[in-house]
Image 1 (cartoon, one colour):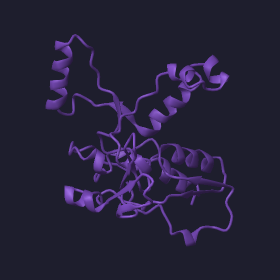
Image 2: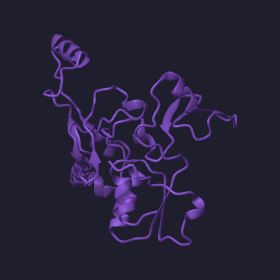
Image 3: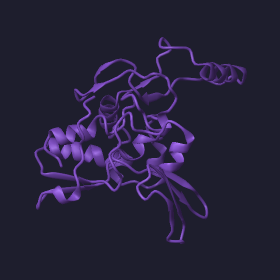
Length: 231
């Protein structure tokens, strides 16, 4: 992957854009990429900073220094204002989101699963989707291809924890499978033509990949947007 930075300070923004995309996670970056490819003048706004592979935390102390904690209804944020690990403490549920160019894709576990189609009825989606449950299938396929979503290849290396989970599943008579994950296990270009390195199995996916192996939006959709003249 090129180490060329994608972001610019706000004062460098053009005076006019046709489309403003707020955020840079999965939804935002895909919108930016598709619209930029369609020739629209696109600007992406991201509150977090751009963190390149090799700059992510490698120790617990580094994680604490790159964290922010907001307490519900207090108006107070503890820690770094642009900390990568953005913790929201609420009455019923605590949430961890990513704050950086790439959004939560920077610190998630890479698992790439489709939602259960029964949720379309449960949440009363528009009739178009309820009457056509497979309507989104081609777009799931497109996203899987762009994100390089594939199951962990057993040929790479045996993983003791994965083997233990398989043994537990067999003992309970339950099926087990490797879910698709957004990680590359070979050196070479990704679906957008940007170079990536093979996973080293370091286990640091959820604190930021320092080896350009995790398929965050910083690696694919966002540089594609910039290549198509998004700002």
